Image 1 (tube, rainbow, N blue to C red):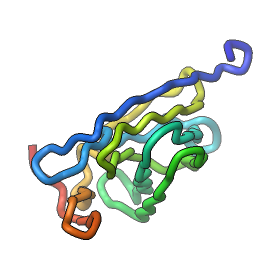
Image 2: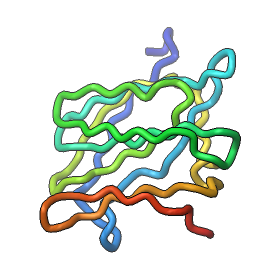
Image 3: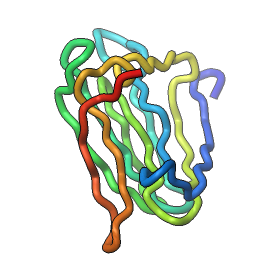
Image 4: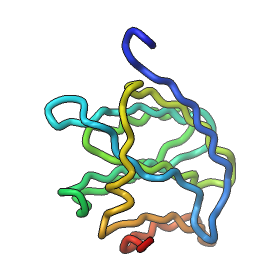
Length: 139
């Protein structure tokens, strides 16, 4: 791991809600690796379910593309270069996930903090979950 400058992380997310919204990580983008491409990241769901919300940005404040990947135990997800991401625990069980990433990358939270356009929330309803897209909140 040291020789290849890789970092291995394990994240545990409880089955919680904040109001009606499912628990999620704070969105971030990775630092530039080479030729304006950011570092990728690989996740594996160890236990539970996860939604990986990927967003690419046009400039600093506009969302260009949004992709939501639903993953279950043993699934492996690649966060490609130039996508920021958020992980959501959509279920009523603990989510445990592991990831590999370049050890020296710097995470940037600014695109998600400063975006004029987009906040994604997952709301629990009677028959499952609903993804709701809304304008970014003001701090």
